[in-house]
Length: 139
Image (cartoon, rainbow, N blue to C red):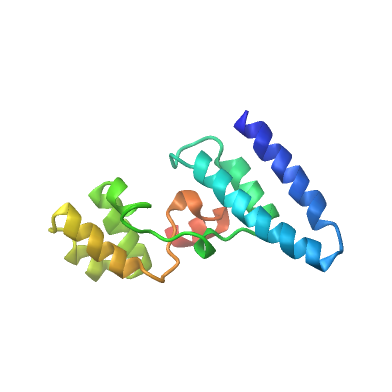
């Protein structure tokens, strides 16, 4: 059912992108970013999910960059992942030194400090990155 919804949305937005009316395109793009982020958010509950390929196709079709719509906060991510993930996020976004500095903190303090380190850096967990961006981070 979700796959059908994604395929339908992808077809709809591809056809919208072919129209040459600037105002319609701008409105469609804003709407598609919102809808795409909602679909991705709904589908991307696990990084190993088989639906990610469809989500990536939809994101590419509507030129969705989740860095424009989402950031890691205590409520959206940091309090809900293991300690190693929080440290990995800080290491990827900043560098090893601040990641190491939060290693011994209790969860609440670690989440708060990690959130401060990540604020404004446009860091995304792998599940929200475009495939090319995810590969770049790993290199």
